[in-house]
Length: 214
Length: 396
Image 1 (tube, rainbow over the protein chains, first blue to last red):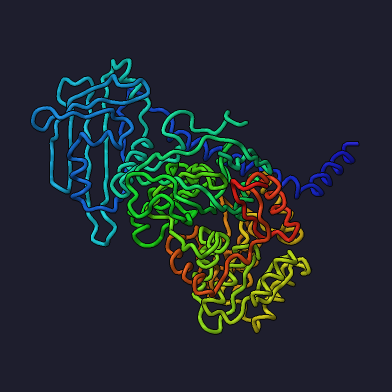
Image 2 (cartoon, rainbow over the protein chains, first blue to last red):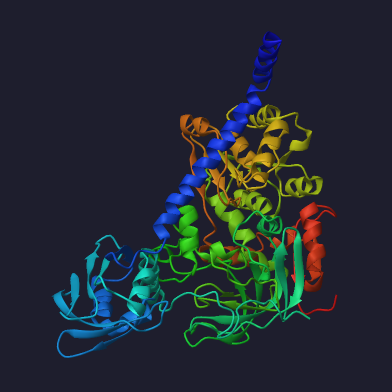
């Protein structure tokens, strides 16, 4: 009986080896896709507010370094293109007052001083001591001489205190590198096209056509 | 207004929706007088393009009258009659500055989605999924046209809609496909797919000096239309398999193979036997998004050092591409969405000079209200349907 059973199972495997191979292939491919999605999902998941948040992104803008530098140097312009900044107001001298925009709405504010200013090359800023949050950032402008405009490299850093609570914690947990990348896309569109593209259909209200069928 | 809305696979409906509004300074609102169904709309109709949402308004081939303008548009006025390129382009980025409008950096507001799938985003396109911007399309009474100072071109009043409508897509698309072939005297060009893009590729290859054009399809009336343009034709439904088709192409090219192969079929090609079954199955299991049978044949058929020109639309991933043939035969691949803005004026000149009348591809006129029936017929390729033009606002 045992021999017959073994014989049967051997022939089963050989006659179905193609199907088994295909099945194995599908399993491997599916596992591969799942692994890829998991890895990438991690990239976009919320960052823990207790850790430093470092955002960095790069874009090439079809304008002179002077044009991009001038826009950025007037920090009050930034909310036009930046999704996580509600407004920036000029204080005395080189100090600007920043108000964050985030999932919890405005609630986190700080004063930052421009600590380095090299016209058409670099801007750097840092929050004043005693601010609710320690934050600093840099933007580098590198003009190209091949007609491709200016390479812009931006870094934003937020270093929260350990006891950070409320709006500030929510603001930081919602900050993702992708937001900065989208903001640089907005900056590029603003400077190259004069407006930020939109596929909205209406100036206000629900953009879907749903619900008004007759 | 009335508009053709996507609801799912093989489900389009004509619905009453809110009229579009000016959103940005460089916008215009166009009252549509003529709009066509594109072969690529069938990819949406068949549910092959991701990121479609229920109620999305279809259509990227349309023309009409300017009825409203944003404050930033200085080169048009209300009442102008314009054709609108399907490729939305800002005019200010590096790519627009270099006449590569379909690669515009600034016209896809949902670029992040395209970047995840393709690494970088092309331009936004009307009525062609949220991957390409989520813009409402032109199979409607009114359309919001962004960057209206760069795209729309005024057309002379003595030319009818049917003569200039295809400047919006299929004529430039066929023309760019032929231009990408670098046609020189004596060259033979083979064209896979004799739908409207294939027909304009044939016409353009002739305009650009090809000695011979070989057209490949299986629909009798499309092959007849190709022959009437002076192409030699191969009915692949009469071929016993891929090698028979390749043999017939060799026989028509002195054994060399065509100097350039235009693949005007795209992601839903019909291959032979087991190969077709393989692609259909993988596509159904979502292990492959595109069925590249025509592309495979083109690569195999092309002469050494020749050009593969691909106006056919692909969305994601395809299998069993004969890369060995491509590499060892030193083929060049030219492709892309069409840089429509680049071709508007030169192709309008061809029409005005009488060298081509693009209306020859039109087989049917429909009222916009009859869009579901028009899609069904175009999809099934019955009633000798090559191209449907729809007119909003006219009684059925």
